Length: 343
Image (cartoon, rainbow, N blue to C red; front, side):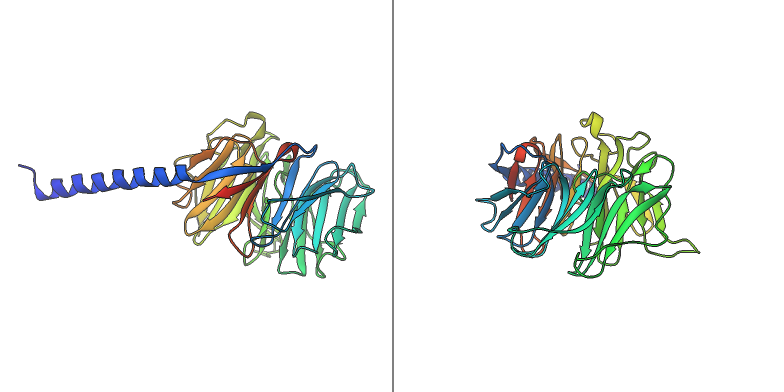
């Protein structure tokens, strides 16, 4: 005869199996629907304002906007910048947005009329300047991260909504062969308390560039993800309720699944138990303990704060974003591919 403790143990295991099956069925019900594709541009910039309005930016000077949740898009090649690679975009409304180019020259442009006209706010022809990502705190305060120059990361700051930009004093030092990735515009974020960015190459770190600690002009912590080569490292980060998730990997071997995602909370950090389906260039927080990530091998979701990931789609994307005010979630990638997440 089974003891009471044994029966309770069997019951708990049975309930866990049922919950796992129910969770798997719920995840399978979620899908990503392609809205359009076929444009000659690689999209890495995506900013979702609300449940109707979003902007994208990409290579060959392309920018597009939607005001109907992605059903239709208004495309343009920004006049005079047809060869620019606009790797990141920050939108504030259906009228106002800022785009940033990677490569030479380094460019920052702004529109306040829905893209009818674009004003050049910053330009640098120095080939050492390579801009990686842009993030804003509220409307006025913003930051752009660039690859290291003379051993220090390039930090550009604005205090007036992107109208003027200045190089930050005493930017954080970079290790040899360390850099950031201009993969989705999400290596740099505003956490709610500070700007932070993640790196790769020779080392993978999370850096808080403007926090002074023990006479240093920045603070950092190591991230336990793939690193060592120029194609490896941390590519994106997202802040949840109690933890931060970081994703990355090796874009040159994008189906490699070891040490692709990590999480940390407080002083603890660790590799996630069940990894995503390979290299991930972007991760976003949805709610509670649920995060969504995407990359060239497909899209993955975790509902337990990053402990276990499950692939929900095999399409290749570069970036995903959730509405700043609302629930709309969009994806974008190469060849002008745009998609929407259907939970």
